[in-house]
Length: 176
Image 1 (cartoon, rainbow, N blue to C red):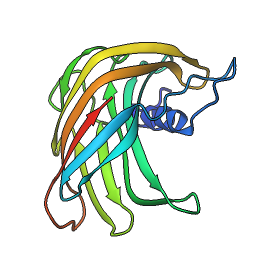
Image 2: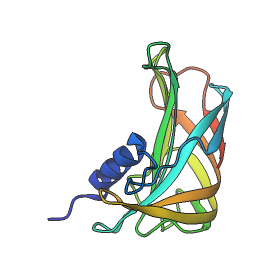
Image 3: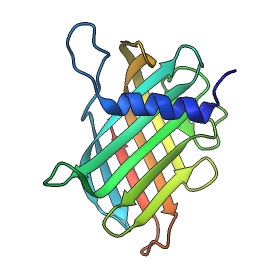
């Protein structure tokens, strides 16, 4: 039985997020290749990571965006951003929105302020986003994931409150 697209996305995203060494034979790694700027209810500019993958067995493509602020003890503190934009094929150059037929329903990007408990997000049903992939370069194959890609482009998104967040929406502009 095939796993659902959402389950596959979770596995791919978890594997990309783990990060791997660059020794020969190790899966490819993409880290700190972008900038995420926030305005609105949350403001600031942070280094973020944007990576892509395509599962060979399940035929699901993913663009993942992440960042978090590490605390003094190595734990996460402050804001965290995590999201996946899901495709029925390998990520390819182009312009995509939440209403694009190439974007699947497990798509979501979520921003959480761990200190206040506030959160914002977009999904294919809430908020709005435009993803422009100017290039997508295959950088290798991971035995647990499939093909791994380094995307270049931009992501512009309006994240709407998912909790009793005050201050309205958050606008995200990511370049990578």
